[in-house]
Image (tube, rainbow over all chains, first blue to last red; front, side, top):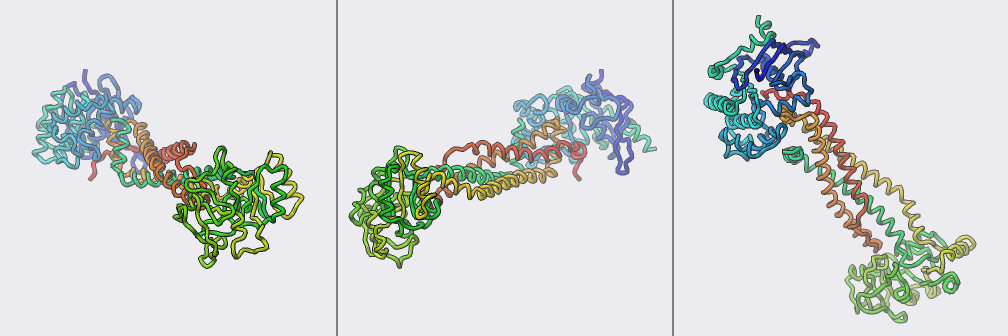
Length: 226
Length: 400
């Protein structure tokens, strides 16, 4: 049984002129447990909206988003929040670290909405990403690559079943990009988490065996392209 | 990491606005509690101050003026009574004890009051408390001797054995010095009554002071009276105030002072209203401070939501943050309150000799902080609802 299965998922938004515009229309998409999958997509293709739908940050207009046996699309918002906190890890392009919190606190905060803060576990994951010596540093005191690693540690801390990574190397230089990608993939392997990574960087995509084209997956994008 | 931890971190991140807002709450809360307590205490204390007497008999005039002049040693005397009037009242069957006083002189602004030594030996100025001397002995009624209230002695820096020349009038004017020289024989122990700020000399001494009208050498300013029973007051009230027209019988003293507070009650109300308004403005300050920071923290809120925080968690965090600012402010408000009370207490002590209990407990110390914290939490609800409704996805978008 796949870990993540999407069926006939649609999401639309109201345009400023009052028209409803469909942004995402995914007939079917699935990822197996432990699988690492990359999606190729250009900016504005709706891939972030797609990840937000899976994470329950946005609610789908229709369709089902099954994570294990729970349908994210059918859950009430508070239950979506809970499922996101417990079962998903989200790595953002801009890292989205809280600037007023130390590395350790950023990780602990992520845990607090899920299974609960566990300082030992938070320290372990930060050590795993090579930041054991920077636990009490604030994000502004870290390099971009190190900030990305904190974001990775935060996403992994709750031992999620699925990691969503939205252009995780988009803000990194080539060297950091390689390191970061290796770290994300390795740590997902170690924890058995599935990985769904979205990128438009050919170097990143070339490292994946399974790469899907988001413009083929998303019916809206296909129509627009034609 | 608890909700409270997040709140504390938010407060630290916006430290300057937190401190300023908490200070404004502290000022408002301190002011509110002080106004309330000063009002309560002064009313309670002043209506209780009668230095052991039930009534005052004096020249025809205002009862309040008579009480203020003879008990509180404020205001001018409404006039004099002659010896016959004094002899009549002191032998009246309804009167248990009577002590005459004469005023009209001062020493550097501190009133000199002529009286009998019995005031200090026979009268309980408060239940089970008679005046006592901390140093020296009582004055001899036939000599030019004086005893000083503790506050007057302290302020004038006068010791037993020192001498002084009285000045004519109730207001100090160095040109009006009397030639008589008085020797200080004793200092009274503090009684926390208006007697503490008075220089007491023999009645005869004040009556016969050089420059005073020799024809009025036997006149007195007022008679302080202890009644045999409460009904005695009705009898004398009828006799002096309703049937007579030469003298005023001020009774009961507490009710007359309470009447003063009744007359200036509007002033209390204005002060209280100002305090309430200041409190309201401070609570609005909390709303504005947090509301203004919402734009800056919208991304943080979106991140928390993306990490799994519920909308109600965000709402609770911001309301708790507002309530915490209110709590910090009200803790500091107690410092302001006691500082205000100490200052007001000193002013009242200097002006009246009456000591307010600066450290006393009042229920306002419970309800004012609770009300203020609730008001702040209510103020926090406005930005909290804004955060509650915030769209996560748009606030998570990369900043270009």
